[in-house]
Length: 195
Image (cartoon, helix red, strand yellow):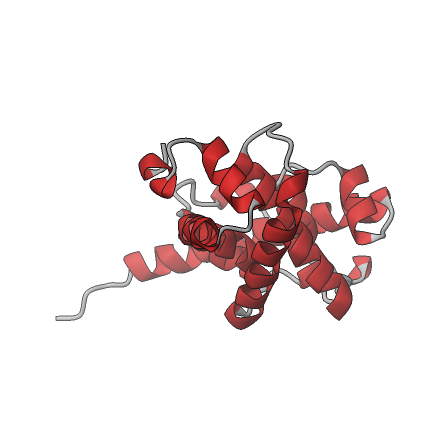
């Protein structure tokens, strides 16, 4: 359990306290989940200040909507979904997710046979940051959050084929970036020693 659920014996007691708008429970919930949820927000908007704004809006939404939580599925998963939705609403308001590269401008697919299999999670997150916003949003929703193309299309107000196209382009660009990272790492590790 979450260190005795932050002072509460069970998750149900914490949720009940949240439904009563207990500020101590709200603070405990924020302290427990804020860093995980900030990571989610940062995946959608690269600017940490904007991500923190989304995080705060997301927690406000959690506190407003806590009465709608039906104890179906994990509570953390419910909070996570709210954070994803808040991130998408932010992107929609700022029209950042629509950024896409024309098909003829897309990079050719990389040769994945040369890609380093020891790619670190931090490297992958850094590579995701290099994707155009539209690619990154669809990739996050599909590959990380597990949304279907139909759900992505509905969430972003695009067609399923646009979602599939953005995902395909994101993967192709990521493969190329991974290959470039691998070449860069190899050139650094094979640099001749100077005497």
